[in-house]
Length: 242
Length: 242
DNA sequence: GAATAATTGAAATACCCATTTGAATCGAGC
DNA sequence: GCTCGATTCAAATGGGTATTTCAATTATTC
Image 1 (tube, chains in turn brown, green, yellow, red):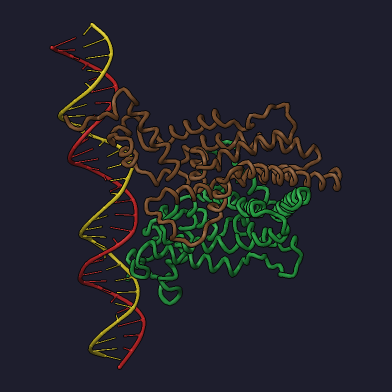
Image 2 (spheres, rainbow over the protein chains, first blue to last red):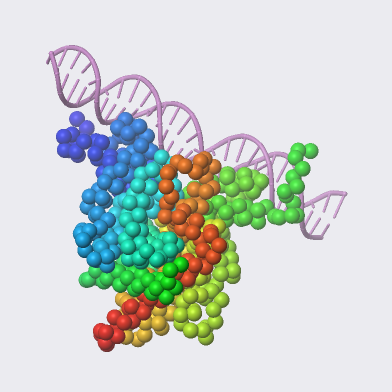
């Protein structure tokens, strides 16, 4: 009777189907921008299922966060696969590679980074702060320690802080641009010429889509970052002990 | 009769009062996050006034954008007040100063930059693209030309692009962090310890709030940026003509 | 100072959304 | 094959929002 629901039953459980769609929609359109109804529609599931399996929209969202965080940590560790024993510059390169992968992976930022960006520009609920904080804190303090190591003991805290920020924060800018481009690409009414020229994010996307472009970007960022660190070190040496 | 409406009449016109409140709320909470009702409440104005003076919420929003863009252009020109005749490094410093002022001005990012960030992470309507584009394009292409000048003719387009992005895009990351901190500060239920440690944006805000911290940040960014450009130039020289 | 247009006010309308409800259906264990 | 708990379904509820409506009020013009 009724439609042959081949998309149901043992294959993938309702709960999992909801999660799969939710992670996609929440990361692209944010918490407020995605309705339970739209999730259920795409997952071929009744709206009540969401409130049955997860108590509320917010709890579903939290679950999505936890899954995205786990997934990112597994597939893309902070160290970029570089051993602890490698040179500082090697390790820096690994960290930068990992960050870029998260926030500008050619086709789209990772789900986690998109969630982070939405949460930063439009916080959902204090309950999310905890998990969001965990997602940001670990890579940030790891980077800070590495910068401290590279700048040496004579560097002031402010120098370490600014230098760390100089590496860490720009990727949020990259992610924001990428996310904007990604959304624009997926807009249903995108006729491609409503705005005459390209936004910085689109120019960048084009560049890294080219053969070798992505590696070139990582090279460029690593090179300029190392040069920046070197410049700060020179200043420290010139100044001597504070 | 009724309350002595001292907040009305010739003083400031209804339309202007709406705009004043709208620019504040839209920039902090975004388009979707602010209701017409909340604007009218704060402006001591009836909801119908919005739809009388501006046809719709969207048109009010567009008006706010135009005003914010105008205001920013007047009070904070791209060149940071540095003359065309100054050295390239001086002009770069001016541009960086201007960008930082827009996106991380100690107390809060400017209205325009907050609008931009919201629009990037959660686009409102194609009608906004035009004005948003104008807000981003001018400083971006100015920066690009300056970078081209500093890198010389032998630099590839990709080198110019990446270097420009390396200066231009990070400020979006800064702005995103600042906006997040700013919103958190202004949340009504902010007990200050729902999350134990500080987010990068908060650490940074603390640092630039200190005496001389803001200038130190601009110094740091300028120094590392110049060092980065110098590194790219060296690569170009080493490589010779492509 | 009357007539007319502009503006404001309070309430109504229409839509979207999260959540609830209670019946229907399914599935495992006996 | 029956029972009971788990799951799914369609419809209803309640709260929020943008927008409209039209009468009341204010300002402007002659």
